[in-house]
Image 1 (cartoon, helix red, strand yellow):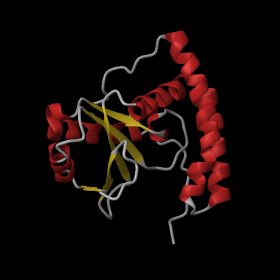
Image 2 (cartoon, rainbow, N blue to C red):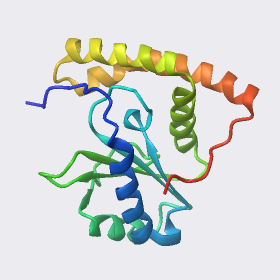
Image 3 (cartoon, one colour):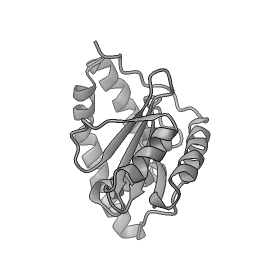
Amino acid sequence: MSERIIIAPYDASWPQIFAELGTALRAALKPVALRIDHIGSTAIPGLDAKPILDVQISVASFEPLEAYRLPIESLGFSYRAGNDDLMKRYFREVPGERQTHIHVRRAGSWPEQFALLFRDYMRSHPEDAVRYAALKYRLAEQYGDDRVGYTDAKGPFIWEMMRKADAWAQESGWAAGPSDA
């Protein structure tokens, strides 16, 4: 049986936890990582979230895999070869360590930009972040330990936010800022 979905109040230590990991990733990956960014809900100040750190590493190419696999694994993460999302390479913490999801994506790709735009839009629109937190609590209660159902149920809200984020990006001239690490 899967673990129950828990939404935790925002933890002000999440950015520092990312900063420490980002520094270690930068040292290990050197120029292979074009960007290392804190993404996902823990990257949005004030947003209650599952206490799972999401990190996005942008690379020029997925090949050779060893160029980033070995440095990431040297920091105690496990490569998930069975990931069915062909737009990323995926790493997780080893058992007993803090839950961390590392998403390696091609620089400039749609999913890389999606994650950054969603994060930046939510950081700039705290009223939508409050709505997102309320939805997460409702869905965690509704779906219990069904992570796929929980994730799928967030879809309509996320796409609503991305429509708003697209308009905001066009009006503001948004571009992804410098790498977080």
